[in-house]
Image 1 (cartoon, rainbow, N blue to C red):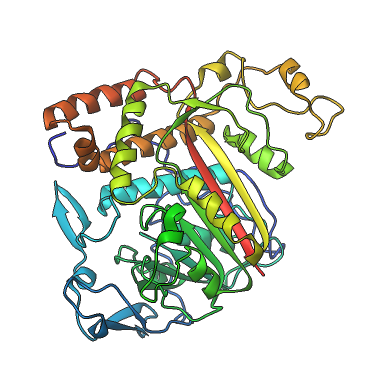
Image 2: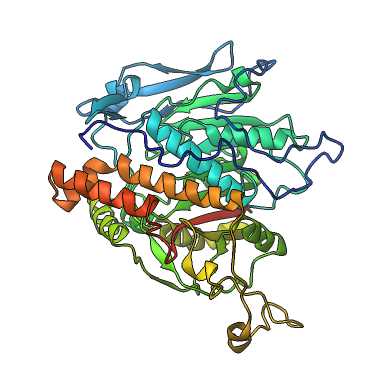
Length: 477
């Protein structure tokens, strides 16, 4: 690469990924949904405009100040325009908020040097995030993993670190297809990347705010559902959050603000993926706490449910091992975690007493066809005949016969999307990784060419290298 970005499309992924799990929710007399996600991120852009502005409790809050700017002069107010979109009105302008972008190395980044966020915010990166969201929704079977909305839909939904707000748009369509049409959505992000989704018929607002600066600009007990996806690179490592203090010298907990703005009985759900990779070993057993629906969804999507006892080995692919070393070093220098799933386990268990219910689902998504699947020497073990899952012994698991796995086109497409978005993620981090590796540009170009050829043409992940994804949720007491 020569410093300018190239949108990587080694094998064009399918335009859409089908959501296979059918769930009967809310209005059972509603029109039956198609069960397919939008094939185009802007597929709903031509729907009729919404009939009126949404109602969301938004109050003035202090925001990040530019260096040398008095925070006392940085008070901002949020007002709703006649179209329903949220306008950001400032008493004193901060260049980082009104003009948040700058171009470096041929790509667009956030300008504020104090932000730890390492990724570009240009069209290529937004496309990568959209494809990753589609892939994770397909692997999960729905836009959210919790089953706490089985009987009634949320009324007010907040997506934190919303980016292009593709998840909000997809969730809106998913809920509407199940008869829940009166749901309002709010997206919050430090930069205005989201389109005006009211034009596509959504009850929608966008709020510009720095997620790392509490408090969030909402009144207490405003939302039924708060959703956060891939925000681990936006704020400091939650594992060290107990050492972080706010302006009043009080310890900051990453979930305090989400809990404050949730209604009693409201649900917080967080999705994250680790940024380093391991090799999934053969014969991963099914975690005992999983529901039959979770197991069926994993089998249909050719993903593997994982638990703390799931066996992994060090990454076998030499290029991904190089990347693992460099990304850990690069993110650590920014105070970020390369394994946010571990941090989220800590975050939810740290304040377990504030939740009425807790749940999680973790998946390993291989990057392609795996040798031990094809040869029938591995695979997720079902309980022995006549035994429950908890009664299945290690001996019975070893005696189980595992049939060779042949991927369907949909399963292969999902794995290809996981690999594609991973390579694009490495591409987006080129500047940081090149610095962490100590490579010159010509050396990086050679490594990049060898890496992409190995992963895309030589099936370099056939040992079981995989993307580790997790969803955590809790209902507020």
